[in-house]
Image (cartoon, one colour):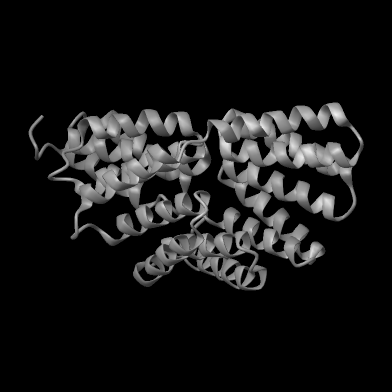
Length: 318
């Protein structure tokens, strides 16, 4: 095939559209990326398509596939001709790493992404890398640096990704015991996600709103938003979002005084976390189960959950 072959042109269009649709329709985005791979073996096409598939896998919690597609993308992408694509891939791999408890590898991937895009990199790629770095900083208990990074990203971001940054700010503020401000940013994330048809962020936006409402004692509103989050997660087939919703529904059930419902939600969430795998989420769920068993006087079950929690925390690496 020559560079102006119609099949290559069509494949390049498919690869571009796959990336363009990534926020609004996971199914169409993935279908177009797969079609691009079938239509051409040109490296610029395959690299772009694998970038999209790695990104989609990352957002739905398919971390093993994220790693596979990400490595394939880096094998064929030209870092000189496609620096932003390389940066996008490194951002996805960073999420995969920190989700498994390897924050050290996550920050290495983020730095590789920043080096790839340089000072002139695409704004959306830069914002993505900043958001991922902020999440790692939060997990490293560096809240001031985390918030500073998110506020800088907020100044840069436009369009569909803006909902993601509002969601991240809300999540950070809730973690630092500022639920009123967290709720404001969470609701803004919902509004922006709906306005820009950002179907991928919407379940996370609803989930973080519910988390802040649980903290504020607004339990009826929290349950309603968790129902919305679950519906959106089912629509986008997002295992990670389902896991987070299970976690919050368990916390809500505990707050409502329903330990049996909480137990069922935490155990279902734990199964999802193991499937991804999502070590960070798994550790949180084990901690909740340990506390729940302890409150019920089930010492052996509590001890087993505490041991699992400790094992996962020991395996983490900064």
